[in-house]
Length: 73
Image 1 (tube, one colour):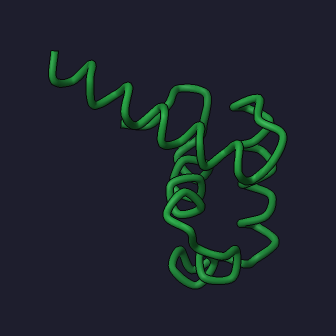
Image 2 (cartoon, one colour):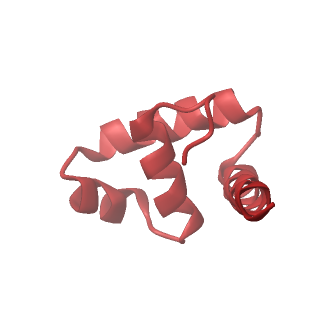
C-alpha cells in the first residue's frame, strides 16, 4: 500500500531510497534514467513535506510502520 500523496513511481523510488540504494542503483533496478530517479525523489520530498533525503527515509519508515499498525488492527 502506498501513501496517497505519492504516485506509484515516487513510492517505488522512495522505498528504495529508504533501503539505502543510490540513485544510480535505483535507476538500474527500475530500468529508468538517473535523472528520472532524481526527479521522482524531488517530487516525493515535496509531497511528503521533507527537506532532504534523510527526511524522506524517515518519512517512508514512519508511514510504513503506521500502515502496518493500521492493517494489524
